[in-house]
Length: 322
Image 1: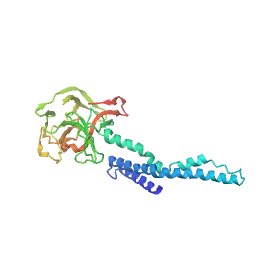
Image 2: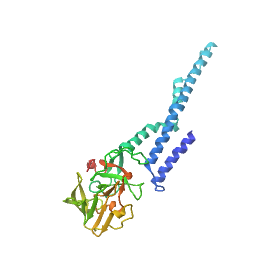
Image 3: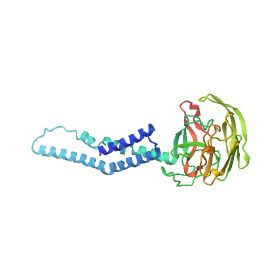
Image 4: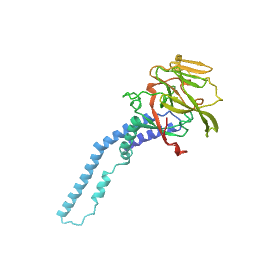
């Protein structure tokens, strides 16, 4: 068992190392699931096999020690080796390293697995596509149950939950590469006609208000952008526009239901198909979103982003957001 356990732990370490170095494309949900299963098997084996064996061995030692003393006493021998039975019993009951690193970790790994799979999952904002709502380096929490609980790894929905609403900030699996997680704002829900023309957003023929705010200064890019306040659904949020960027959408990819979209020099108009969502970043001219790669299917949804729990460069960022 020690050799087998060492091999299993080495395999996990090799997978994590190769993922970190970019040698292979990792899947943390799958890795956590496998870790839960493996440590769970060891925990069950410890509880029902290995621990009872160690207890029997400790009990046998105590009985044998007492029998030896009684035999020596019957022979008139009272001076015997002073054996600390309690200490020896404790050594016998102690978990070996290979159980300590498997069965001993199972409760912690199980708690993380359940928390991450069904309640809340942490994410780090890697890019500026959601500025000014979310900044690079923000550590956020994503609600995993609002839109319905999903099986880990398979991402199959098992409860209905509340459908995504316009204005929600949502984490989802990037349709062209589902192993990547993206975060954008829900702009269009199934059945909506979304038009983004000349940098103005229209939903089902209704032009959204876009109130000007003071310019936003991006400290990382050392660049000012025009800032506006927009009301989308029941949520009011800020967005940025860059006068140096054109209104037309360059480099559009092929994607399912692309025939639902009409592109022009002014922008794009799309009819959102059933079971799909149209997503856009709040940094409108610096966001790779549904305008470029299409609609997000319901099966790709991860959860609703709602809280910044840490930004090591700016503690004032901590709190909820719209």
